[in-house]
Image 1: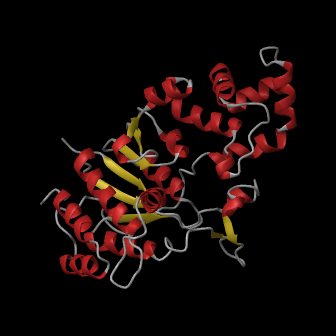
Image 2 (image 1 turned 180 degrees about the vertical axis):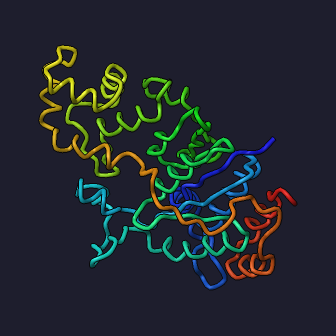
Length: 314
């Protein structure tokens, strides 16, 4: 049986590795490599536990895209370390993580794993575009962020999320039914309903204010009742008695936000994705000598060994 297509939310995974492992893990020159080793171990676990036939590490070409901040300036604004001078804003990233990202990319290249990004878009958009285009195999999105729950679907290609927000040992595999049960949204369109609920509820970690006074349970109930955020807003604007007066007033007060929130929250499935090469999981490293050199230079020993052992040709 053909295995799934695994789409990795790379930054989410290496951020979590960085915070999960001690920065006492260093290379001979003193460079911390905890994120590199944790990310490498994560790929090994993915190959061993999920058995994908194809895998793409998806990257942020722009972690705070202009098309989103033009609509909602508060989007991820609290994470800006340095405003961009005519270009992308610089994200606030721990000093000891920044130098590890190029090493992670080198490891991916040496092993022969595909990477993908889209100019002016986030990794979420890359994942959404690749998942939506997939016609041949089930898709598993591997992430520690809930934003991508919106991609779950059954047709035309089953797409689920392997959520590792609590670590790989407590990973949850979430499809339409699980998202519906967890958040109280309709199972038949749980993905889009989750996105609408998230827009209504808001998310301080992403600078999304949401609608004041409407929490997660109320948001889920309203989206379930009216089918979509658009239908809810239309009903409230028309004075529909099914929308309580207090809720109508809250929605009216947040009209400017609600006009742009769907575009900000929903992944851009039309992102112009550029991929480094074939996404087939390599049976052996593309460049074994480079893998060995990286392992020695950066003290990646056991992590690289585990990834080598997890390759399907090992």
